[in-house]
Image (cartoon, rainbow, N blue to C red; front, side, top):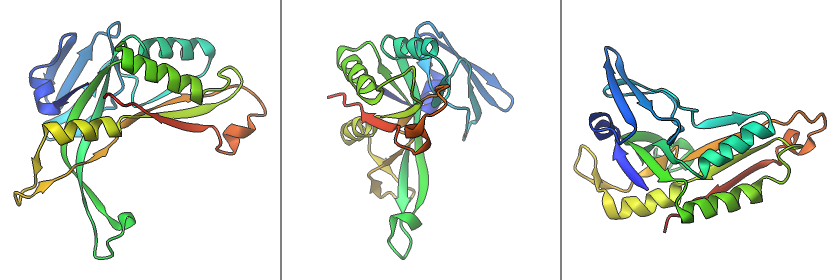
Length: 203
């Protein structure tokens, strides 16, 4: 896994990426044969960042061919995601529901889908969560929170404006696959039973 601040990514894009400066922000191009980009357009301190050839954080599939193609990409390409290190400020009630989340830094995170450990977990997770691709709609979230927390504990030290060190809370540390079947009586999906998730651990 590599974790790169957005500003550094735009300044020195990795191999296979190019960055074009626009009046309102940046356009990022990538090679879809080598990279699987799952980043929605977003606003940063440097303007609007648009990733061409990106499928977005939530990928929809409507037939077996699309699912097979997506699965092949996940297991063979380097996957790129946008994640945010945040600080939670609790209100006087000290309840999580009343907390305010402030984004401290944004990162482009990449993992190698062809890495033996990642590939094994991805295959196992997809096989476990998807019982019948052809006849059942489903949603599966692939979560990298634990991997990021482990990385952050060793590699970054974030301080607020008051110079107080904070332990970041990770936002958007996952991506979602949605498969929509044309089955007429897809009761598990209607009742919300076809939502699954699994965690990727990189150590």
